[in-house]
Length: 459
View 1 (cartoon, rainbow, N blue to C red):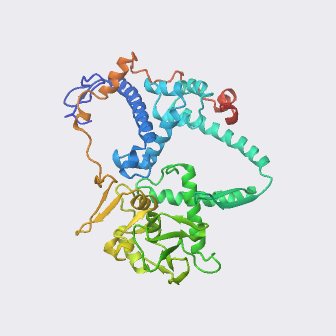
View 2 (cartoon, rainbow, N blue to C red):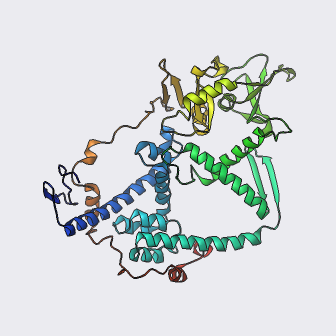
């Protein structure tokens, strides 16, 4: 402890009298327990704000991939920790008793994080009683055992359901490709493992280098699986499964009248042939054409094909290698994804050159944001990039520093004021477990408390 900045209790009174003479151990212990309880209450307030912010979609204003990515960029949380904060914040919305206990400072985030993995409105009362009597380590151990039992029951149910296999693929009215099917257990296991491996690769590509153990969740599990399936298809084509020849990620067929090719898309229509001939917006075909094979078909006014141009790839391999060596990852502020597209800053359809100075790496999410969501990017003569929101506001490379007043006054003064207004008292024993230190029997606790997942869901 730095003697020039004496520790203070929640009321603001210093716990170190002077120099290196500390308060006695009991006083320090009480001060730690008291302040920890206030931190638990303040963490609950933080989770509520995170849930409101995520629900409102405020993180998208800065072009962030998700609320967790925004927290990683804006307040310095590791991506894995940020994802857990978002998950727990949403889970607490359906658990009023656990929420109330945390708001009072009685439950720590460690306990709440474990409880929200298994708790439902039907089971939270009994799980809360356990959490108030057990240590954080015992709660973690119990919830892990609960999940193992859940998985065993679910596996028995799954084995009885898979009787037939089929897979249907079609293009919906809005151009989306729809897949629906049932796979045999052994084939399904292979597909799931492949999707998990692809999801992990995408997760690592989007995670900062110092957070290699973040949770495997990006935006939603369903969106992550959809991205992973696309990655598997691209990998299959790259390994010459496309009728014996190396396949392209996309082949964009651009139908135009005469020899016109306008950036605004008014002179032609773009068609993605392998998706049932779905028509694309001008912004979407420009994004795909940044880094894909392109075939231009010229039509007469009556629809007759006048000419079919050679298939060309817009980014030569040598330039792509140089681009990857220079940028290494997505260049959008706050993004560290490594699975990226090459983006033309000044699109080639508008006269932009396919040169290193006119290219930058963007992940799929931010590539779409620049083309379809009206974010913009410009390169300065010194090589620096500036990204702007759709309203023209620049997006800083790093967030601004917090407000100076946030560090002034007694620790957690707003939380203390809120607790006082609600008549909630916190003392050094607020977070102390109710047990007397007796041995924790996980099997007995499961026998008493466990409710199958299906039975605990509201009907």
